[in-house]
Length: 130
Image (cartoon, rainbow, N blue to C red; front, side, top):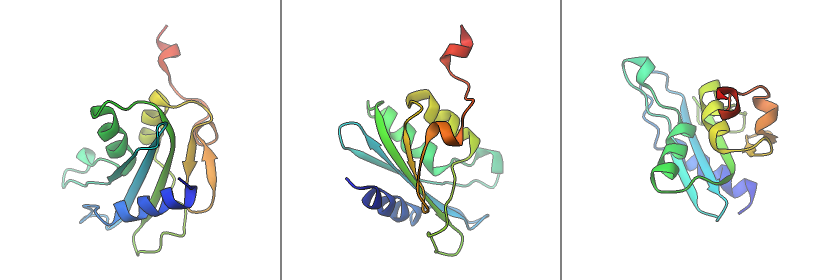
């Protein structure tokens, strides 16, 4: 699967977003090592702290179905339907990704691809617990 195809899947996932408060739709498409794709969208709640991001939705769907080895994630977000601007994952989503993905994990945004270590260089990991 190409990065462009993965990004298109993220845009399609954003169309399913439940975002009546911010009107900012986000979609994510998470590629497993064996080629399966899990999509997710942001789901808002009137109690804002209970909102769940698209990236975490995709990761939790994959984990709940027995997948925990990932190659890449594409993230697309927009308030006006223009998904050509990059939508960087929030710190909480980057932290969740760091639980399952190494430094070289690929994050595809509208402008280019990034490594996880570029977007979150000093993550908290299991090694910090020792």
